Length: 271
Image 1 (tube, rainbow, N blue to C red):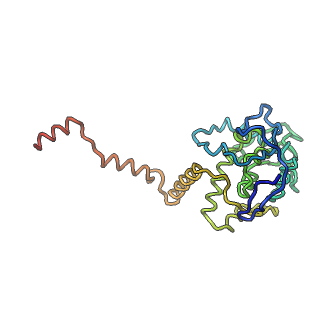
Image 2 (cartoon, one colour; image 1 turned 45 degrees about the vertical axis):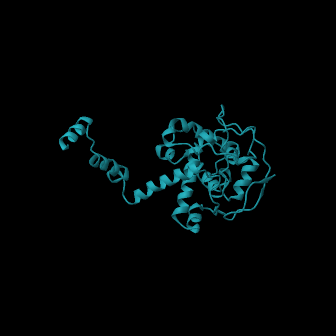
């Protein structure tokens, strides 16, 4: 079957690849074992809404998220990077998989040396997981999410194929953030500036850029709100100088309400 990929920003009109039909359109559920191959591979239906777009920061639990993220990382390293469809997409968007690196390749999530170590706070904050091998390799999923977003390959079926059954809970929030970052990048500079920002070292330049795919009105409104917050940050309109703070202060000064008894007494005094 033909990959549903149309020209726009330099991409091809079609991309031949064989995919299997997913068993359902529901969001992928967490895998009990944490790193089992997805039953449907890359689903052939890429147009159903992405479940992470409604995720709000106040609903995000970091400590519930982290095990799901680790599950996605293990699946990507142990299974996905060796699968034909993932290798084809990675080659097409010009990004090396961990085992293809010339220096410090990451072959799997399992240790080849010492027992597993606890990641440092600085490493955890970058979305990376140190692998306890003798080469001290570090694997991170963020570059792959960014490249899929920028090239228009961030369909749920592709994300499922890259990151496994836990992708929605494990990398869904990161995916939402990177989609927003892509919108911000497009608003901040020229096409060449954006492309340069998404290029990577070692000849892994972005072959083409595509406008953000499958965008919902809710996602645009959320991005607009966050962009307005950033503009306020640029103007130092934050904290006590924020617009919300000024509105609350003005309401407290200008709106003085009288009690019903005071209003009644004032009416008789005037009359």
